Every structure is written in C-alpha cells, then in structure tokens.
Image (cartoon, rainbow over all chains, first blue to last red; front, side, top):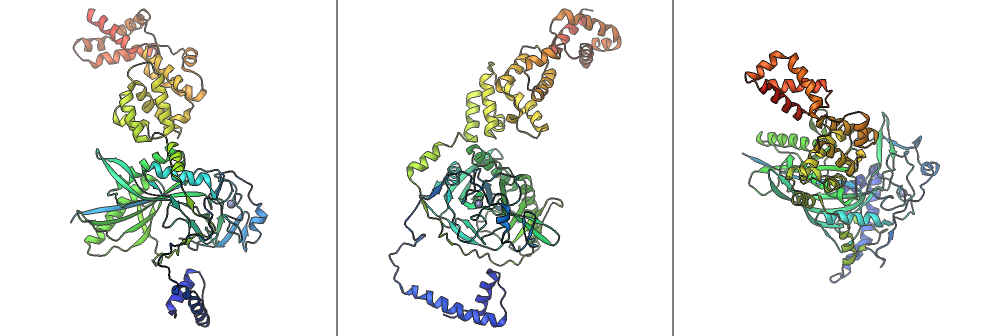
Amino acid sequence: MSLSKETVEYVANLSRIELAKEELEKISKQLESIIGFIDALRSADVTDVEPTDHIVPVNNRLRSDEPRGSLPIEKTLANAPHKDGRFFVVPKVIE
Amino acid sequence: MNYEPVIGLEVHVQLKTKTKVFCACPTEFGKEPNSQVCPVCLGFPGSLPVLNKTALEYAAKAGLALNCTVQKYTKFDRKHYYYPDLPKNIQISQYDLPISKDGYLDIEIGGRTKRIRIKRAHLEEDAGKLVHHENASLVDYNRTGQPLLEIVSEPDINSPEEAYEYLTSLKSIIQYTGVSDCDMEKGTLRCDANISLRPAGTKGLGVKSELKNLNSFKAVREALTYEIERHEQVITGGEQVVQETRLWDEKTGRTISMRTKEEAKDYRYFPEPDLPPFEWTEELIETIRKTIPELPKARAMRFMKEYGLQEADAKQLTCSMQAADLAEKTMRAYPGANKKTVVNWLIGPLASEANARSLQWHELGIKPEDLVELIGYVDSRQISNLAAKAVLTEMIDTRRTAGLIIKDKNLAQISDESSIEKDVAAVIAENPKVVEDFKSGKSNALMFLVGQVMKKTKGKANPQVVGDILKRRLQNA
Ligand SMILES: [Zn+2]
C-alpha cells in the first residue's frame, strides 16, 4: 500500500511532529511497510464476527468513591522540563 | 426572506463526586495548584484508570432525569488531541455507546410547552487549567480527570429565549438529582452553542458557527442574539456563512472569529483498552431511577393543586430543591388556609433578603417555624407589615426568633384605640388645613393624616385602626 505525501504530512501534523524532507521520505517508507503488515488483517473473513471493544472478558470493574492521597509536589514535577513554583510551564498557548 | 435560527446546545456539568472519574484524587475546589494529582490523572506511563462507581451512577441518574434511556452496554473511548491541559494527549470520553441517549426536556415558552430532544449524555474526564503569562503558560492539573457529563441537545431550539429556558430547566433538573451544583461561576456547568439559519419553514440546515466562552445563561442568550443578526446580514448580503468557532466577548457584546485553521477535527476515537466496558442490569437501572426525587415541574404542578398556588408562584418556588423544601415546610406549618400569605413572604421579603446577601433563601438560616411565627404576628395585627420586614432582617442577622426581637425592640403595634386617640386628636388640631381638604372631598388628605399619626407613634400604630378613628372623628366633627 502506498501513502501519499499529503497523508504522511497530515499524520505528522496530528502528532505535532515536524518532518524534514529526507525524514518525510524515510518515514513514508516505514509507515507503508507498517500498514502493509497490518493490511494482512483484511484477508480475514469477519462476516459473522461482532466488533470487539475489549479483548479481556472482564466487565464492570468499579472503584468506590473514596479519596486517597495525591502525589507530593516534588514527585509531580520531578520530570517536568520546565516548572515555576507549583506549576508545569509550557510555551505560551492562546486559543 | 424570513430566517429561522436553529440552535443546539452542548452542556458540560461536573459531577459532584468526592474523587476523580478514573483515579482516587480528591476533587475539592480551590486547592493549591497540582496538589490533587496522581500518576493516573497526570498520564504517567504504566498507570491504569479505574472507573468511579459513583460517577457512573450519577451520570445514569442525570440521564434518567432527562428522560434518556440508559444503554445496557456502555464503553469508553479515547479522543485524541494535543493541548497542554490534557496530559495524556488523549481524553477518555465516550463515542458510539454513551451511557444514555434519546431523552427530552419540556420548556415553557410563550405560554406553551415545547419539547427539546436530548441526543445523548456521556461521561468523560475534564481537562486542566491554564494560566497565561507573558511568555509562557502555567498548567494546573487539579481539575484534570474530574467527571464531566456532556449533555447534547438536538437542534430543536429556535430562539435565544428557548435556549435560555432550556438551560434554566436543565440546571434545575440536574440540581434536583443532586449529582452536580451546576454553578456556572465555579465552572461546574459550561455551555457551548451551535447556531445556523435557514429560510423559515424549510427543513435543511445552514452553515453553523460554534460559540464558546459563554460564561452565563445571559451570555448564551446575548451571544445567540448577536450571532443570528450576523448570519442574517451575511446571508442577505449575498455571502456565505463560514463554518467556524467564535468567541463571545462580554465587554463589546460581539462574537469574534478564532481565526484558527479550520481543518476538520480528527479525533481518531478508538475503544479505551485500559477500561473494561460496563453492562447494566435492569435492576441496577431501576435502583438508580428510584433515587430521583420529584422533579421541579411535577413539584410545581403539585404545589398548584395541593396549596392552591398560581402557576408563576409555583414555578418560582420550585426552581431549586432546597428552596422548594423550605417553601413546602413553611406552607405546611402555616395554620392559615390561604397559603398565598406564605408565598408572598417567600418571594417578597425573604427573596430580597437573600438577593441582598447573594444567597438563596434556604441559605439564610431561617427555619419554617420561625417564619410562620413572624407571619402570625402580622396576621394577628400585633406588628405592622413594615415592622415585620425589619424583624425578618434582624432574625437573619442575629438568629433570634421574631417574638424575642419584637419584645426587645418594643415593636408591638398599638391596636388599642384608646392609646391612639390622643395622637389622633393632636394631629387633627395641628393640621386644620388638611382637615378642611378632607372635608371638601380630597381623599389623599386622609392618607396624609394617617401618616402623621404613624410618625407620632413611631410606626407602631396599626394604620388601619388609625384610619378608622380619623374617619370617625372627622365625620362627626
Ligand atoms: Zn489522580
């Protein structure tokens, strides 16, 4: 299966990834082979098969509404590239 | 050509659970930033969500109260989009199998009932909050993962007034079920609106705009009114409405285009693999249905039948459950047959006391029996209406009973004629000209004289008794 350049750029944009020209070509080839691999599924006959929402036959797992402790702030922010006081900091976003 | 607005509303209400929808973090409002977070709601790798039983039950309860069908089988889906307030880059929501669907809500508009269909009500998790600074944005994830119920109406709403009525009824019903506070100021109720125009009498749908940043029911009504006019101008000017999201600007009273690239939204929903589906039994649904109290409309009807109230009064008394509870207890405790007396006190003085304090009347700390006692003093003419209002203020401020306040402040009204006669005689002697006016037939002269006597008695004389004595004396003079 071949992918158009537009499709790959579209997917990259959805994933917030910027691709250079060479990368675009390289990634396109890789994506094509991944999709080709998954395409094998198309050959399966699913005429009488119900769509699967969940693979584990376990339903109705619930938790009672009782609060437990939250993380201390040091742990919460431990991996944050940028922080300010108790906040995570990100590049300015305005809708 | 005449155009008809077609409006659909998306309402998010925050469910009043103690913990978040998929983790055990508390949901208290106004806590320190990032103090109510854990690996699950922060989306740390390897953490697993588990559904909150109460959130699920509340969602179903609200759906049932809105006449929806709770689906026997429900599941969660991942909705993908990138925004810093969403730490997982996915929102756990529901796509094709929402908890409930196909409901409706009846609104009163222009003296008739109109049914607005509800398409679906689904459970999802809330996002965090962003604080924008000059060069960066700060993120607080306390709100992330709090349970939201998204209630989507069909485009059955045809005017800003209908939208306003729909929201008012919706809020009232949800509040009665007790699953949410529905407080727009605190953000526990949020609303987006879709609006388009079509030639009146036709069935198709025009190009719509989506309105955001609607911070009050009034804002919803005003933004829709503005937008209808804008669409009309675009269309009659021979141009096409552009499908876009627009922000309501409260200050200028206009909507502003968000000017984002309007690419089709591509959320790439798929079933959430970390959460198993939920299957309802008929018994469980019925158990939840039984927890729904008598809803505002039914209660207003009963108030009319049982207490002989007018429709407008009954509607006002029942708009919130706690207020209706207080009203009903007071009407029951009141020994008089005419319950309108109680209603007048509730929607008159009590409501204005509440307004002055930005509270609802059940929050004033006035017990039904206290109010009945106060009304009793007025009914038996022991205090004047005016004095009674002052007593009510004092009751709210000091939490003392009417009896104590009246005694303390010496407010008891003088109905004893002999003690008023002296003041009446003095007023007649002091105002010969007004007395002449009365005798020559000017009826407002009497009002003036009554006022003078009231002044002399410091407002404690029963004005009706004063009037009677004055008339008798002047006619015999
Ligand atoms: Zn959490």
